[in-house]
View (cartoon, rainbow, N blue to C red):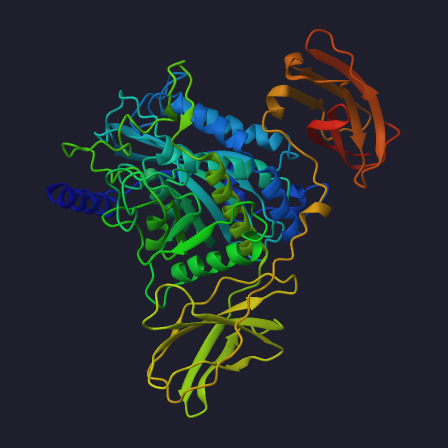
Length: 604
Ligand SMILES: [Zn+2]
């Protein structure tokens, strides 16, 4: 019990120190990213050549392209920086938080290079004394939305910092694999995969700093959003999302017993009395999962909507956003290895210790062969995040409702966002858990008498809109209907059938390592008469029949030439006087597959 009370005190200290200490001098280092976050940009400057915004196609792409190999490569790399504590080395090229964040920044830039430079990567810098360090940086990359009439952004984030038993130990081996290389890898992989697509809303992929000392990096970003009037549609915090094993301890509500394995559930934590949108978002994600993903996943995931904002005595990066009124939730593995009470004698679990490593070498050959993160589980949690963001971005607006309880029954009336032809009504008896008992769908009407009501019982009612593309909005805050006046007959709840047909989707395969396989430089750009093209290819990466190609906006090839390498590079002048003004795609091909591409603007 001593350990438990220590934990509560630590948690209280963490929360109070967020309130007590204020970050100062908060700014975004890249001016262009700053303007995009504020919605001050022309979307046409950031539109993909081939605009794909169909949610089925995006989800299918996430299912096929979110890669366990990529996730593994990021996590392995994050483990090599030795210590990612917020107070650790910022100068070394190989160890400490500085090297880690520069590597993450360069990865985001390499993803952008194969996505027509549509990701803008930056730091959010702020001053606050944390573990002896006074200046800190979150790392993020922004995918500008296509519609700035509603400037609200969506944030997918995870903290990149790590810790050992002592929260400011900057020399221990704080690999921080489950906590939280797993969430960081998820964020990075989604930046890579989702940046091919065009979303209505701006999406921010963010790796925060100083979560372990008191959620400081997330707090600084939330403060920056508040200071600049930036609206946020949702924050998806991912913290501890790859592990499937229970330790001897865990933070409740969690593990049933030590060594229990669970690779099919993910928990969503949110603050929520009945009138809060955070919990409504969590319930909506449960439905998105059921209706858009579980049916096509090889191993279906199940979402647990949790009845508290975080595990008992613990906290996460979604909280500073929620504290400022932004809708925010946390994804977290069903099982955790430890309760972070690492100062307690006898604590043998991994969380917040030097033991939070990639895995074990079980046969003594010096190679890790048994992993503590399940990469397939992490992959599914990544896809679920992509599904969630896609639905939130492309879906309609959440309606408002009025609920009347009288002799004609409990009647729900859609009172705002009345422009849609269909709505869904979620019903939850007051004695139920966090989940809906039933969801009904109404068509071409704004009023609905709730079926299946028992006279004298109390219900929570909420509603979601359904857009013309079939996407459901986030459910509204719940309204209480106390002491039902009359009973009503049973009704027919609806579940939207999964209509994904991923076989018909032809998205060109991209490789995470593409930026390292080949690089492409085009100058000048925009150009009018000629361009200077420099191609570098690393031969050991299995490139065959390399070629340089230019296609116009309709996909027609207007220039094609084999690349003759001198050593690893080739260098040539291409005459473009015969090409009309417009946007073109320049690509390096290997056996006719694109391995690197850049957008070229021709002006006349
Ligand atoms: Zn964490």
